[in-house]
Length: 408
Image (cartoon, rainbow, N blue to C red):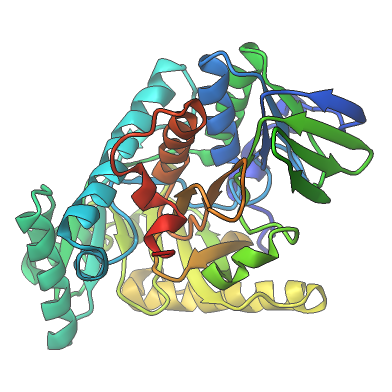
């Protein structure tokens, strides 16, 4: 029977997990971060390094929610269509968005190394695969590739034959992008430790009840405590109930993941080089990542969130579904058993891109929402962009990452 808990969380020794208190009483700070996942901790580390006083409020344990449930990929592109974005926002805006994401992916990997965060960081490409025997889908993906190349991005095209040789998978072609794989939970703890070393304060098991922004400050009420700050950063996996006006921009989704038992040598010989992660063109898509101990991590089966009453039954069903769908990609894996399985609730956005920045109706709020399937580079993108916004020195084009692109 699989363990119904995220792999990254389960593998980390409980005795080494840092513990932080609940918030009690009143505090004053420069910035309060709501959400102690990878994005919140990256923001805390970035702000603290700039000499800004930070308090982080996490409803659960640091890194134990959406971060521990993520696949651990750092992508150089968004999980969205560059061609569609250029059509909607203009070529210059689309290029700015994708260039920002690529820069964030490289800077994030460099920051992990610079901070000496031990999280098994390794380079890993991602192959976005068009389905076989679907000429229209191959043409669409090829147009997407051509649009990216024309905009100056150094992505590469793989033919069906090259895809079969490298990944031992049947497809009509693929776009190869660069990136990294890592352990997201260990990275989150590493950035939290770095932030704490520079004076940031963390509180766990402290769900936020209310946020009220005034002319000179923002007041965040959480359980038995209150924090007064100049600004609040919303860095949660899903939008807070107190921010109801944002609901029309965000859609709840529930994804599922399985990790296989170690695959025997006879099976591994049928799986190609296992050097790159895979993303298919299903709707919703699947992501496949190979782990260093000869296991496969497979993510997908997205749908609307289920009720708490149906959660356990649905998780068992989705684990079986994902193992079957994995066997349709790699028949050699058929019969393998899942060792871990878990679910992840997250927000997607109306235009497929995350929201990082300001909203005109929420003064003193800085947002990092709608990460969806975009990978962990969005966390570092938010950490740097929001710092610039708080300091009043935004870069040209920063506004494109926020709500302004859809509030025209």
